[in-house]
Image 1: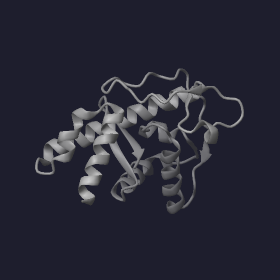
Image 2 (image 1 turned 180 degrees about the vertical axis):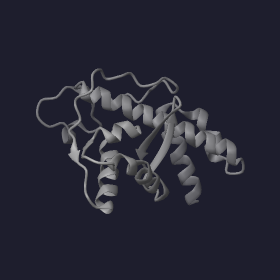
Image 3 (image 1 turned 90 degrees about the vertical axis):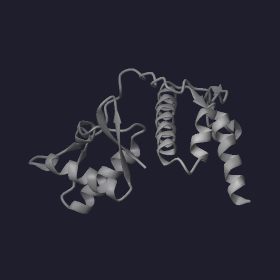
Image 4 (image 1 turned 135 degrees about the horizontal axis):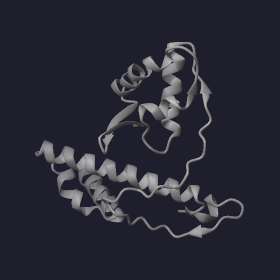
Length: 172
């Protein structure tokens, strides 16, 4: 009974986003490859939608779910439209604001935490260069970043995604 409730909820969520094309593959646990491909497609769509919504919010357009509770001060109410172009990339938000740099920590545990926090704070997946650009230090600290990112990935804290052939890391 619980499984059928989960399946119904999954179907309702996919329908709300207009992504019913993924429903059959996601529900089928016997075809591992098809299910894995559907999961990957779902994650790509969610990342694209998140980037699109972040760009909209940066431009001042917020889609409130509960305006009386969420909307503070003077803001413009926007309807909650979840329709997206499933395969269309998110539109760029224009010139990005300068990201403040933080000092590179001296100890390995602090370095790992700083990189994890940097990924968690970013609304989009980051390249190695993006991560490097968020820190300042002297010496060979950049050489440790790939190992730290691989460590976070092995611990399940980040996920490596390839977008247009470019490796990027995002928070899980």
